[in-house]
Length: 241
Image (cartoon, rainbow, N blue to C red):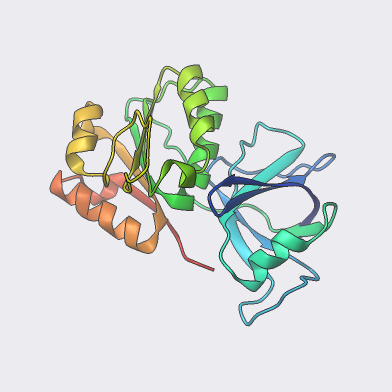
């Protein structure tokens, strides 16, 4: 299918060194399933490098949210991300058709357990929001690890989703405690004990791991402690760029 061309509608900081970019899709039909990703291309980027002008990003907004799509990224000092910061609102960005299999399973009898680190949260945000809007009966559990509260993207969104959807339980955790006050959630890295204490019927659950390569590998090891079958694990790995 041909690419879509959508203007940049909004750009804002949503966490420490993390920005969200919203594109205006009004008048267009851009189909995608919550959890999928697309390739985003800057036709005339102000900065260039050998990696080119196209990058894949998971779509963080819900497909039920008509008129716009949103993606988010950690803002490294790269040509592409510096270009995203500098281009004018209204600049058209080329977007490929959505693809990917990191999507919620159909069988509501199986709980969904999400293990996320850093910006790996983006496809999960879309899945959780959509499940709530569609009133899906799935039991959803999110364990989300970051260094600090200020580095935790979409923290308030997930708190809101948890209030709106009684089937969704949210467990953000931070690993750096120095100077942190009023943190009411778990601390430390995600361990199997943390999961086991909060998720009933673990053996039948489907686990979704999303984050940097090292985090995905670490979470596989955590699940191995609990003898979780590899067939019950779905992963999405985020590389730095």
